[in-house]
Length: 547
Image (cartoon, rainbow, N blue to C red; front, side):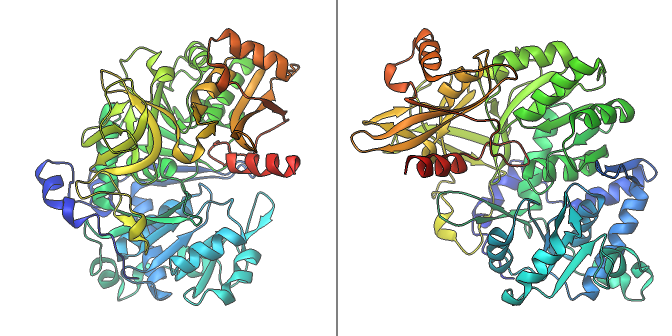
């Protein structure tokens, strides 16, 4: 694969001089773990359905990574080749990434929710040579799906199946044979290790372009985010990280896979979100930190309160992906005894704004944090002029962790000559430099020329005593162009209708034009595994019902 990470070279000299790029790779960190804490538990991987628990010390983890690396080379994988990995949070995911890093291959994490439509594009566009999938996960046969796609993917040479029974199983091809004893193993493991500016991760993100975009990251770009992130959260080798967010997302990949190795921590991986299982793991493993979206925090607080099973070791819960309702922060603080940290980020940058641990709790539900070291923010109007504090506009970011570009689509990189990246988000900055995301430019509802602040109205709806989940989406209107529809999930035993919702929002003293003119009540919301509501599905359903 020829990578066109054109955003890397122009930033190198400055990023290194400023100390933001560290010129090291995950190989260096794993070697440091081997030298300093070889017998410390590195990974505890828990399969929720089967109850199987697998543990690796750092010594065992490195040995398995070497074994799988040689095995991948036997399959023809070499420097800059793509290895796609559509796995849940299993130990094989962690090992596959480390193995790729040993031989200079590039990992392409794929969400386990993807099916034929998404995969056929991503595997072809990324020219994946190998794809690793589970045989079955949550009742779905991945081997059958990918083998059905293989004839249309000219670059895909091998489908490797975890828990498979045939000759193509992960166990038979990669983790079973003692490949590390091969006479060529040393050369394979040392001759083609990636440099810090080589692309090490290709990860797809959706956007407004009509197709997924392949985000390219290097060791320098991701570590430029992880290091100050860990410093702000005061994380160290003494911490134990619980990661239930998918490692195929940056949340799980950067802070559940990479960060523990970089800090010599222990990671506890959970492949399916089950609040009671998470509580058991926090208590049994002594987990001190986790990062996930708002629904995870809601579930954890609710189940701790109902079960009476406290989680006293859990010091910090970093919540990102959507604004955190104020009542939830208050409840979680009281029930969990945990500091709730709000954050904002993107696949292209990682988490680039966080509140401080000693910030007042209200910062967690009134802001999305302040920039990490190496990050600059700017809010501009439609003409690109910087706006003063308090004025909402388009959010631009200039960050040491900014990605290398979109694979084969440099025209979409969205980064100007001065390094400012257009996030596609709308936001405002306060006088202290804290940001508040107010919506996405693609998610704006323009009603008769008036922009409706979607995120702010949703935050108000979350405060309604009868509403558990809420989303505001647009529907077409002949006269005004668009109107707003509120889609809500009531709390158990509660109900709500449109007049009640309108009366409630009027009590909040907001502009009448901002009040939704339609209400859809649902039993559940379509969402990603990380908990984000899939608004595009809500819009599609709404338009279909109106048609």
